Length: 124
Image (cartoon, rainbow, N blue to C red; front, side, top):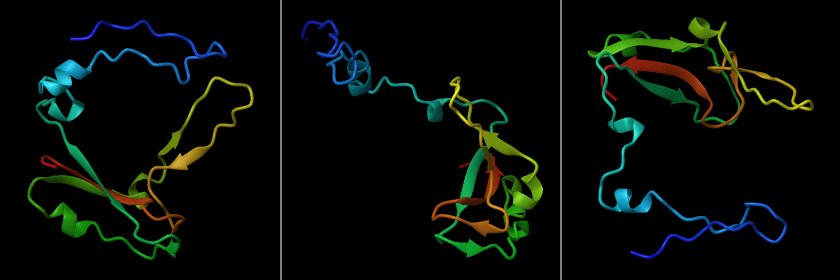
């Protein structure tokens, strides 16, 4: 095993580009890594997002009733159900302008991969 190296700052006194010692390699290479997906808690639900295959499209209707009937599915939601909820990033800087972002697309999609529905189920 090679000796640990001390991290050094780059020429400008920054950490960017500096070679930092890695501490996690051994446990990962030996299969001893712990990941969020490895944790199990009773009652945990898994979320699967349905994403738009279109870069720009009008949403006329999304029927989640068939998904709700699948065994093991807890519920399914669209923007019609969750439209009052949003994400808002925060950054402690004067120049940062908080912007609300919808959880799911409503009325139209603006890019490929934009979430339009979410299904919660006992199994992934």
